[in-house]
Image (cartoon, rainbow, N blue to C red; front, side, top):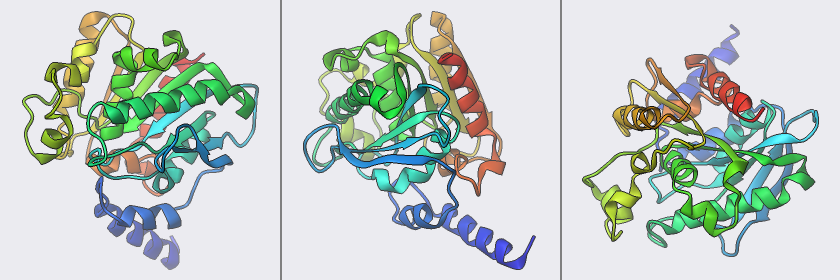
Length: 289
């Protein structure tokens, strides 16, 4: 490998080591990391009012008929994150054949549970309403998220109240993929969950694991065995609950991958760390066929 390539990768590795849900180096990574080929259809389209109501859209580089639609929710402890820092992830998914939407949503302290889920549901409704005009199939939607975004995706997929409230047909959401998500975290411990969920009148209703059901959308649940931010037991418990109900689930644990590494594995520089992108998109393609 040329010295310049070694130096560049070393710099990205050092940067990625510092990437957590709330740290600013992610913006630098988003700017300089190599990106997959995808067509950006729109930047900052509006799915709802307010400064956090925008969505970016990426399309597959080559169209072969209406594409399945993926809505990607980033993480950030429900208090940070912006869609512009995750264009590389949305592009990676789009390059695999999905019309991919990356929305912003309101964060703490502006909102708490369940308001950010209401925003995410509105983004899915916008996707269903506009997918056809963008080259997508509104009858084949998948939800994808990392960390707090995986929680959002799981709640929308498993608790039908959120999508029902905005008029999204349940059968349109064919599958969801959760990467290193928190799905079973009672009792609340620590400032992040206490401030985000502590005011909920029914704490059990904040937990995705409690909404496992036989007719749930197919689930791809992935984590890394080095994750000490959201422990892998969350993935194991939700996967087990879905299997017990008879729902379709694929569970993956990647060796040597930590919390940030689960989403960074979607990027070109770190894709060799784990075959997460290939595994996830293969599962989602099967679910939308």
